[in-house]
Length: 317
Ligand SMILES: [Ca+2]
Ligand SMILES: [Ca+2]
Image (cartoon, rainbow, N blue to C red; front, side):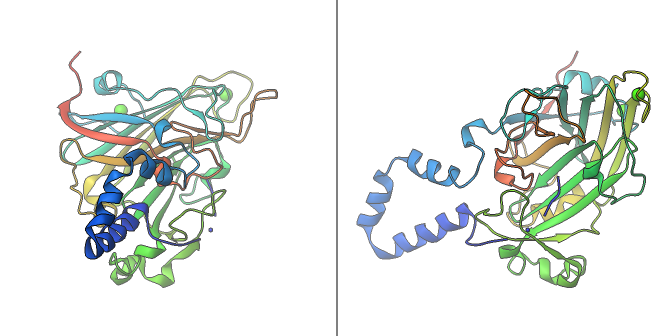
């Protein structure tokens, strides 16, 4: 989703650390008062800053695989059939059901994160063939991968044309070391403040619109005829491979392991945008998500599903 915007104080976790340090350095009674306050109160106050209710944010366990996946767009490897699938995507705004089925599956090994996306689509359409074209003006599938201080946006259309941006939260640009990396020199970045949620508590971001995920591999499979509406198509699938070693700048801030350790949780979002809408009375925004955001804005990592990585293998047949 495009796209475009700014902001303010630190992330909730930083605020809490600051608050805790202050309390510790002042008086024990304050500590007692803080401890006595129900934990739910804190959770609610943090959650209320975002348009997606924390209780609704999706959770998923991604299992490991032991055999390589052939990145050809066809999700016909056994693991794609046996690994858990997401629920059917829902509308980004209402969380209500949408007309076509979309699902995501995530698996991983020590080298790569693999994502399989399935999109039911009776009328396949695609137009852009040059990478970093405005894919969000096509029917597309999107993946956002969040670190603590940065996140990566990925979009793909039916021609396997991609659009990528790497966003750094402005408040972390200097302290996170981004400013010292040539690829994130400020001259290469553009300010961005969100799309429909321009009051994100962390404020503005800096976008590197020429950043490409190192070593990524992508492929799509069109199950039907593209740009030909004389027939009805079945849909399309995207098969994506993101090497963990390309996650360095996402993992840096909190020193998270890549590949993950057993039980590690990353926030990763999955969505689909269409250039059409289901006719009224359906309330179709045209943006369909695994976990709803509640506002027209993909750029809210706090709404991204919790993806827990398990070192257990995908279940045997
Ligand atoms: Ca395949
Ligand atoms: Ca067709």
